[in-house]
Length: 280
Image 1 (tube, rainbow, N blue to C red):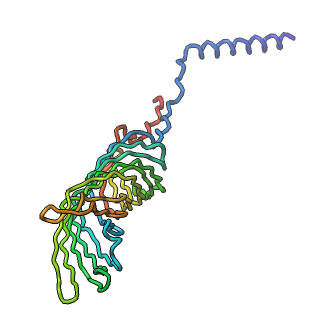
Image 2: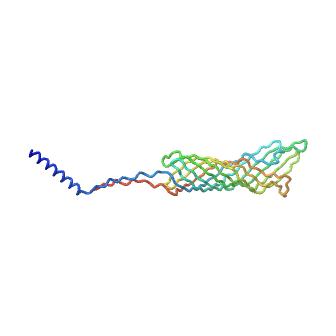
Image 3: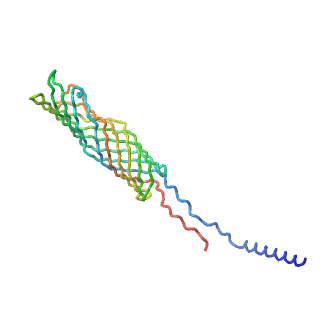
């Protein structure tokens, strides 16, 4: 019985000594861990674009066309520059939107119209009209894009946009030659400049390359439908005109190649985890 009392007393003394020693030791802080990386999406950006157009028009319409028997048109535009600015928002890793405005520089137009027409009640005459003009636009679009994944900092994307265009036709001239059997009659006419607002839409496809967290380069293709253009009333070079007959450029479209830059206003920082803090 006495040995049991000695054993209990020794055990209690040992426990008290251990507790006192533990109370004297400093409390170690919990290990510090690096925070999770920030989400790689979200934020406003500015953009700028330059490019070149490849434009076409379906046909030219005029009030006097109703008098023709046959008509065969060959029409085309020279390429011209494109200059645009915009602001957008990256909603998540794969979806973004922006609003853009651009000036499409003046492109030279050239066309030829071969036609036949009745002369009085009997013979048929033939004519050729050689057209020239220049065309420019302002284009405003609201766009949405889907980013299709990123490989080696390159992100392919597709997109679509809707908006409005203001098409301006300037310096329109018509150099014509009409033949009536053995005779031929030259003619010349011109039209004042005129502008027309249209509904416009576009589809996009391209590649984006992230140079830095705040800077992205784009190389993109775009098909854009600009609507119709119209001239002022066509008059003879002496100013005479017997009928109101402006020339309508029906269904102007363009296949554009553009180089763009996007600047993020709140770029995602480059994540580098902090080292684990350990007590030496």
